[in-house]
Length: 124
Image (cartoon, rainbow, N blue to C red):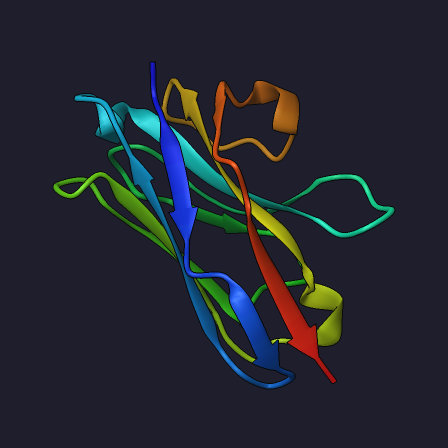
């Protein structure tokens, strides 16, 4: 069982930056692939970024490439999402997710554990 707790959301102006963090419980954190998803009002939840287990390979949605950076610290059981050059369309609830097996997928049903979400609002 893995518990995930996100932090770091808030209100930011367009062009600004926000750093999200996700703290995970459990002893085998480095065996899990971690992902960030987001859901805007009226939209389905979508994949934003992911990072594989031990190798730390990263993957991004086209909409955030070059602006967002995902990273993980296996010693601290944390995964972060640095979001720069934010746009109003980045406004959403952001969720941290974990899947066993170590490989990143963009489909949310492949993830086993989810955090409660943190709101990010980008004003124009």
